[in-house]
Image 1 (cartoon, one colour):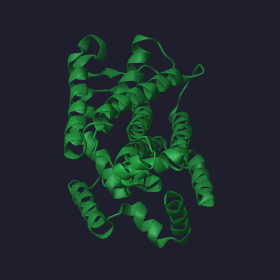
Image 2 (cartoon, one colour; image 1 turned 135 degrees about the vertical axis):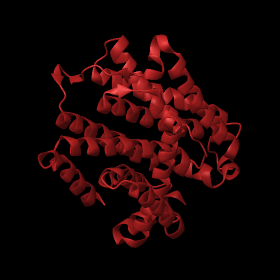
Image 3 (cartoon, helix red, strand yellow; image 1 turned 90 degrees about the horizontal axis):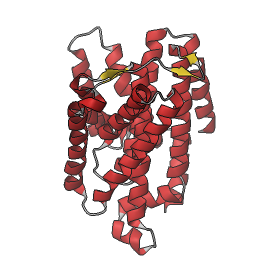
Image 4 (cartoon, one colour; image 1 turned 135 degrees about the horizontal axis):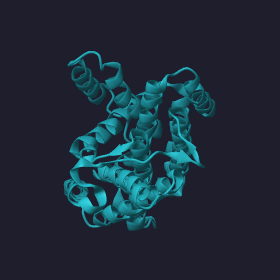
Length: 315
């Protein structure tokens, strides 16, 4: 597994030497959605909570980064840090109802939170610039303007940090507590696991990672608009995780690459994108119920051995 990760990182580092600006933009978009998928999968796959606030965290991160640069003159790194913190705080706020309700009730509450945030973006004209959104200022790092290549490397660095930190968390005792709560909440409590604290930590981490993704999305596109962070965005996040595989970090990233890359490959074939997208979803749900990540883990020896070790640790 370690060697596979090293090879993939080496290829990603070399990508700008072979790709044009448009291809780098697509690759950067894939990196952004890798973070989104990891953030949502933390709550949906590992904690087992039917929560759909990912689009809200995404928008909070984008608006926090963009507005801090426009109104407060923050630099890129400061804006990204602020967006990450705001996403984490939003995660804590959304996690509070999860202490009282679950299932479809939690799903409705989290969807309502996302729509409430979008209402604020549209009607908070004095701060958010209303329904028209706003353009991001020129992005620079340490006084140097960021080209498409530099943005890509910045995003790659942030994704490596975000995914690496998520892997450490999910493979620690906190991650094992997430899985225990998912499998049997009363039993987890009887074993001494602080269930409420575990839920809050998971939601906070989900918001933090997705808020980071939102900041990178705003920097990449150079514009922030409320229409971007609606129900359709949330559905995209959900499908990415379902296709990649619930409770799988590798699956999260595979799903993000597939769902953001396919539309670009099929852009020149009108109508085919929807057909391929629907067929992919049906095939995965029927023949790969654990997603692409689960399918690969069951059929690749090195992934199967890793999964066996993780099951032993979680037992």
